Length: 357
Image (cartoon, rainbow, N blue to C red; front, top):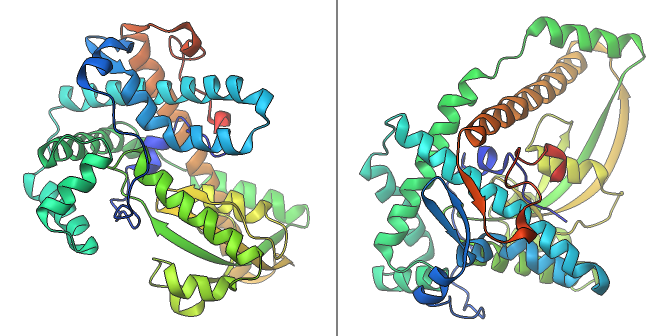
């Protein structure tokens, strides 16, 4: 199960993509009334509330996966665990947003306008149609969505200022690790894979993301049952313009070339198997590995590939360490009260560890 992680903000906030499936009719129940939301206060962070509605909206994709995939006897416990982890991320969101305000960060109105117009234009919506789609996702109005977009951009900027700018990788450490691997007879594992990408707007709620995931669940069933080849499906529906004409072919790659969540799935996937939908910063993917090879590191090109892999992994580890350290400090200085004991797993203490993803 792809659960939220402590670093979801870092990766999700780097791309403002298009909601490919947001125009599909929603079958979700209407959001609760304002009165119901106010009645169910889940947590308070300093003076900011977190409501049950906010928690349910953020947790929707993960809850749906638990309900459909977990054994019946495990569902209650896994739901509590998922919602506790999502609440942790909501708490972190509030603290990061407060830090953005404290830093005096701003977002130019035209940046928000560009984001909204890109979504509206890509889907061919009128303003009225977009407003209706946003309402289905839980936004009261287009103005409400503008505020949400501004908030997400501010959080992304705060993370970049406080964390991203501090990430440094010493090339001496990279060279030392490369030499260590070479001395052990290092090989580079390369994989060749096909993928289908459906983009997700990170500013939208969990309902939009879940609708896109369900499209790929259905498409995967169609592919594995022989109704359509992976290549045909990629040419028809993938939103990766660079690989769509070639049936989603990514050619050969090593670890360190792509998004870490994508790579983790691709390097764990058996040959010729089709993955379940995989969430990355770019959206939802289906992956099919079509070839695997191990090649001994020989020559400058292979050494450069190995260096790139080592450098990338070191940067990711440092990014995680600094982010967790920063958020832990923010939480230590904050007043955090969780109203429901089911969600106390991490919320009152340190942020979740990276391994909880």
